[in-house]
Structures are given as structure tokens and as C-alpha cells.
Length: 93
Image (cartoon, rainbow, N blue to C red; front, side, top):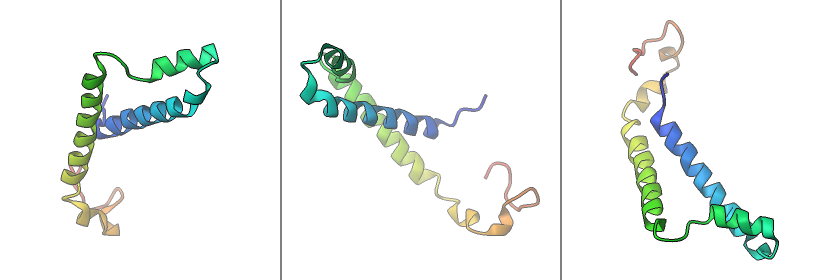
């Protein structure tokens, strides 16, 4: 099965951002035991925090650089006759 790496990186970044937003929203309600457990699960604390944040920064850079590199053939995508089963684009493009 083919896995689009840049799409997966984007998905991981969205999950990370959603987890941080949820942790921020529930932070005023930490008196509720269930919300305290959810907050502790979503918030990165301890000695692994720099490692996890570095991992997400590298993922972001991978997404950014991959987006820049993959736009070199953008001019081919703007021409409508290149699309479709009888289009002029090769399978690699």
C-alpha cells in the first residue's frame, strides 16, 4: 500500500494541534477528575517534552520543505489538457 508521507505528516500535525487546543480549553476546569486525567494525557510534561517537541518541529520542517520541493511542476498542473486519461502528464508527474 502506498503511503503519502507528506499527507501523513500533515495529519500528525493536525492531531498535535488539536490535542494542544483541547488541553488549553479544559485547563480552567482541572477540578473535575476526568478532565484532569484528559489534560495530563494531552499535555507533554517531564523529561521527554523536549524530545517530543523536537519531533513535531522536524515534522513541520519536513512538511514545509516537501511542499516547496513538490511545487516545481506546478505549471504543468495549470493546463487543463494535461489532466484525464488522455492527458499529457506522465504517471510520475
